[in-house]
Image (tube, rainbow, N blue to C red; front, side, top):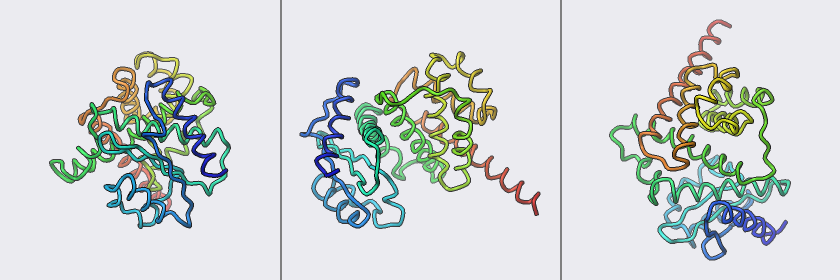
Length: 274
């Protein structure tokens, strides 16, 4: 595929968004930049210099920064939005479309989750009461933003199927294991997503109707996971993507409790083995 092919897929995904979400993505307000590992720094710099100069302060020269398939960029005010897309990975067209739907969802959420304001810039930029509180907010928002974007992408993508939780046991176990690999926030976000997009989750309109269905499966036999799932499940049903600081803070508190619990259990197992 060449750059024009990738652009065509992007605007096909954007047309789906426009039709179902009432957005107005177009070539006038949405830009795409393709990159590969060999030119990632140069591509990032050129993209930001032209459209997103504030992002030049990102730590993009650090190892691991470009460990993504695609990344969404949200413009200031009425400025253009954009997507930086890695193209040195072979993908099925359906996978590419889903990736782009996910990034469009990030843009949509950022522009609509806080009455037009940017939650990350307001609450996640080291200006809270304490470093501890700042860490909780950042953790909570990292989990929520990936969950919200993937939930929207799932609903926009006709290739996604509702699968019963009993067929997701291995996947849920894998994501739970991510708590001990340094990728815990993404792991927990995906656990929540797999539950909410399951056959059980999609069929339940209220938490009272859903919780007994979830409780039969790990890790939702753990009260902390159940409390976190109940929190986001209810919020999505009642508020969709609109968020406030207290909601994100509560996600952060529950996540850190889950992470601490997993670390303690791991240490206990290690000591027992010794």
